[in-house]
Structures are given as structure tokens and as C-alpha cells.
Amino acid sequence: MSDGEISDDEITPEELNALLEEGEDVRIVDIRSAGEFDRGSIPGSENVPFQTLPREVEELAGEERVVTVCPKGQASLQAMRIIESYEGTDGEVRSLAGGLDAWSRDYELEKSEESETGADADAPF
Image (cartoon, rainbow, N blue to C red; front, top):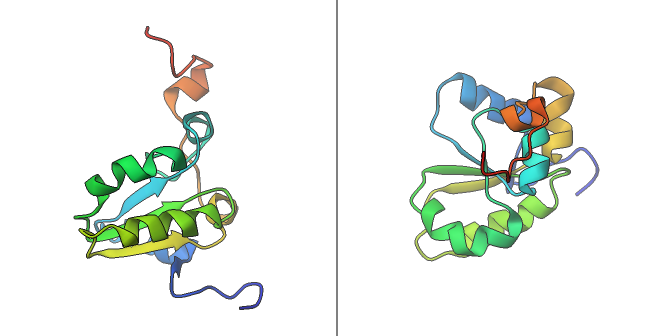
């Protein structure tokens, strides 16, 4: 596979954006750390850090469509394979081609309130 070419395991930012704009049911799983996620993420995505994914995969198994996201699109391919390998998974699981870097070239990122205010996300108050 050459640069610029995506595999069947991937979805382009344009394809993902079109699904979101059409109101399709897509569960976007961002596998970065909580701190990285708070600094900017795809609107509507949820944070499931890669290290916790094996414990959380059962929760994703029943979804019709899951898209995994990481900074450059490499670790999210591994996350996609973890989700696909779970015996209860029967929906479509794909990785965002080029990751968050590719998404942010054309689309806005959502920042958490903690990130915008400078508050510590782990603070109890």
C-alpha cells in the first residue's frame, strides 16, 4: 500500500464527516490519554485510552459502527483489531485514516471545558 492509499480497515475523515452530518449512528473511540483527549477531539467522540481498551471492549461489541482514532492512524488500527477480535463484535469497525492529524486539517476539534479553563481534569472539584 502506498502513501495516500487507505486500506479496507480504514475510513477517511471525509467519509466519517459525511456519516456524522447524515446523523448516522457512529461510535467514535479516541484511544489517546485523557489529557490529550481534553486538548482536542472529534466532536461526539469518547475517550477510551488504549491501555483500558481490553477491559472496555465488551461495551463496544454490540455497536453497529465503531471508528477508532489516534494521532496518526497507526495505533487505532491495533485498537480496531482488538475490538474486532472480541467474540461479541458483529458490527463494522474501522480506523480513521491518518488519525486526528488528518481530521484536523479539514474539520474542527472539540476541546473539553477543563482544557479551556485550565482546570485539572482529575481534580475532585
